[in-house]
Image 1 (cartoon, rainbow, N blue to C red):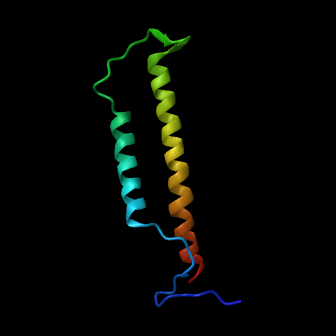
Image 2 (cartoon, rainbow, N blue to C red):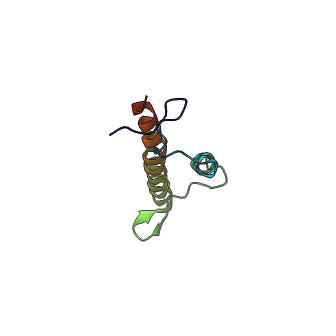
Image 3 (cartoon, rainbow, N blue to C red):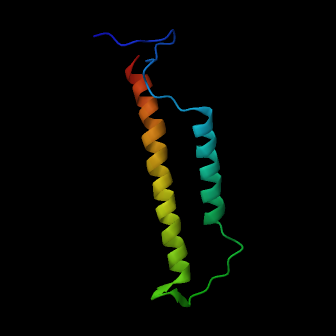
Length: 88
């Protein structure tokens, strides 16, 4: 069975990142960077989220968001890149 290839040698059925997905990836990265360098927040060691200090809760939430972003980014963009390279 032969795969369809375009003139550049990339597989036509390989998933390609759309312009919107690239924009979402860039905006997501910028949002994560802004939230990481949160200069507007003052450190507060008081426990306000039950037994968890607010600062620690903020950092844990940021890490979960960053992990979800990286999972989406690598699943979408690296898979497309690998399938393009495999088709050559």
